[in-house]
Image (tube, rainbow, N blue to C red; front, top):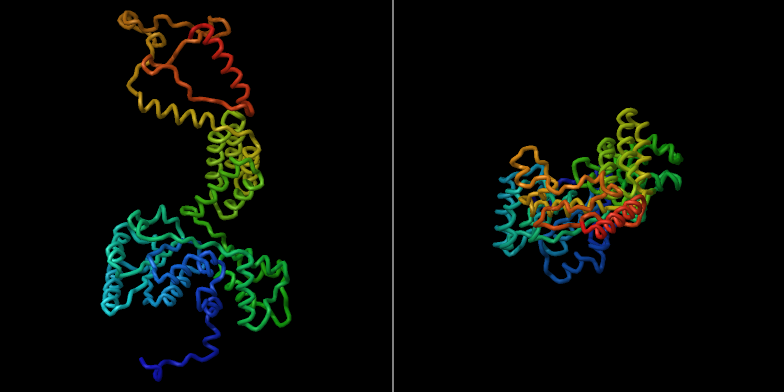
Length: 436
């Protein structure tokens, strides 16, 4: 259609476009919060300068600019831009996109194919990209909010570079709000604390920040300025970016576990509360705390497991929200307890040895002999009953003869395991003295 017959969009209709759309960057240099990619020394800027663009996977949370950057990238590299969504597209749509890209290539123009939510495609659909990536028909840019290592084929990942988009920091969201105020030609009717609260509600999502700002402008009467309480009344609090079955879930439980292991009760409580706030099943958290007790505290504090099981039972008895405090108690107890993975390490070493030597019989002297035949074969012969020995310790060898004595458990000089170390050292001394 020629420009002569193109529909005219009145100014008032254009003004009704969402604020996020009106503020969409016009160049990579305008993109906010991803300077490590789009800045002068960023990865994408260097690619464009070199004249060589390869396939990429954009990985990051919603509202961080993945779609916008892909569109700007195609423009600055002189590529045709085509966009599909894995949510709404199937094999037929992919074939159509590939054929269009081949036709453009015959005309001397390459295509940047942007695939939103690429992790939604199944393995076979992901494999269909491989030949058109390899022969140069398309430059693939896939966008995903999920960890590519888990959600994308290894073959696809080997042909594409993963670029990480970061959640927007406070200063980046402030810059977006300032641009919005310029476009709207009026200040955001919030006091300083409410402005900070709005930025926190956005949770690193630039699009969400601008949507919240629009809600504030719509709600404000002439001359009205909202405080934090007023803000909470006029906008619905945005749910945290968290999917109990996906990456946010695993990221936060990993952070909680590492904070406990690192003996940081404040960080551990923060991540525990993040998960409570996001709607995580508290009994799942109770189970994970029990696991931390046996993996990271172990016998350095034998009470850790008791405390965690009691907290899990207390939550089961009290329910939410009262029972959450019991889990918080257990979390802080674990974070402040002495740490030891000695039993965890010993268990893994013993399991490896057991798998490698699973056919070896125990020494005959520690086997029961319930029949005459077994007694005749030497079962139980020479066994010394430890309670009848001095110090209730015989010092016998209990490993299979072919395997020889092994050492798996090496308790550190921390917490209760310091006492266990003393016992083991004493028994080792007696074993040497008695020739065990």
